[in-house]
Length: 92
Image (cartoon, rainbow, N blue to C red; front, top):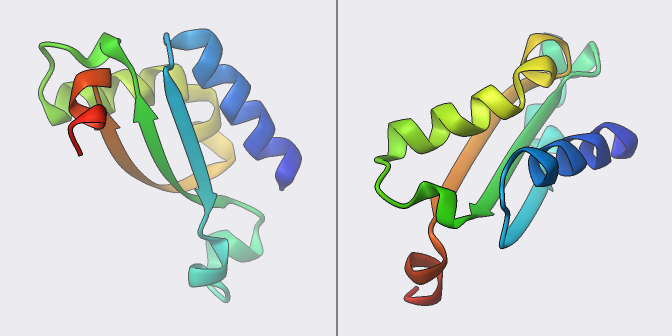
């Protein structure tokens, strides 16, 4: 599982200009669910990138889904996203 999370992290960093990335495995919250039993991931991500400038939340999520398409197809079952530009994140 850790290997898959590392692959996801690397893929995001190669596909986006990431300023800050935090990935939290939330599989423990889904223990017993069929996808969890099949080894599929449940993740929460915080992604900070100026590539999100001018994009609404849906467009930001779509950008991440595009970069992670191969994982969404077979390894990633659930994904919770928080997306910010650098200035937005620094203003929190």
